[in-house]
Image 1: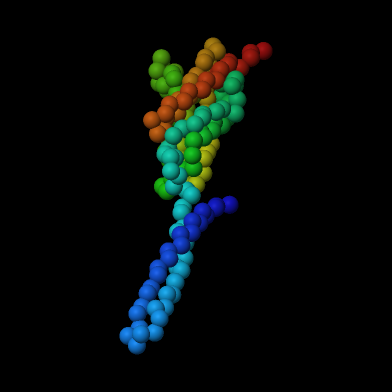
Image 2: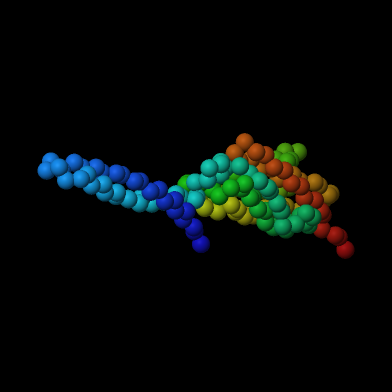
Length: 152
């Protein structure tokens, strides 16, 4: 549900006229009301600041996919907000690809959050993976443990 803030300004104009035949002055007051519609989607503070980055799981078996969530400090403005994502280690570093996140996630206009998928590959040894998000000059980092599948 979208809300619209309405401000009302009253403008008072006083007209005075003088009648030539010496009748007394008459004062008339006209009040005009102007409504200004303010779009609440464009906050007074930046809507691009990344407030938090969270993961649906903190420990997963390699080969499991799960979700992450970016949350902005304010509603995303017109055009939305792009949050840049990466992992540490980066895919391809050390010759292996442990985890993948999209390079960006888009928070639509008027929203404060968006989700994204994290894809993982099987691993031989346990690894700690960091997911890093950047938007509005703010960087947030969260970690998860990538575990090998138990062998039987």
